[in-house]
Image (cartoon, rainbow, N blue to C red; front, side):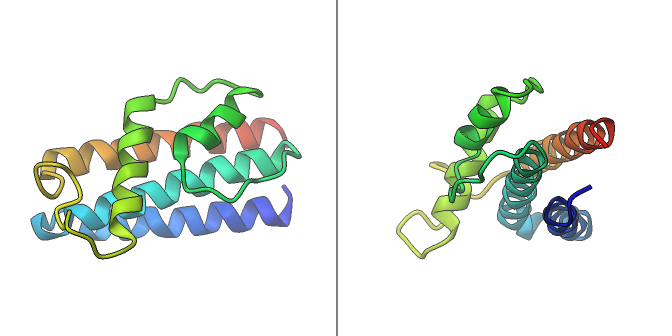
Amino acid sequence: MKKQVEAWNYDACKHLLIVSIIIDNPDLTNGVAFHCQQAIEKYLKAFLIACDIKVIRTYDLARLYDLVKQIRDFGFDLDLLDTLTRLFNDSRYPNDNIGLLPYGVPTEEQARVFYAFAKDVEQKIKAALNDGE
């Protein structure tokens, strides 16, 4: 496996490790969303690099996934990709939307959905990368 792919995977794993530590804290659901977005972004970029596709500078998960789908469609939920992208963009800078979502911070249930989704992305991307070795 390319060193750059390993580096992106390592960073993605660190984000999911953070989520595993904070997932049970109801005050950190926005942090769960942030780190899930980061993990998914890095796994998608790792896959693209492994396939010799130039990685674009974007946080937009749907845009990255469009590139990935040109090689392989993993069936990832586009609505969740869009939601996590919006949450990430809104969380980067202070603004009037402190809660991140139109109705406030993500619920504990939503945080768990984000985490399960990020773990699914991790599993599928890692399996594809291991198949390509």
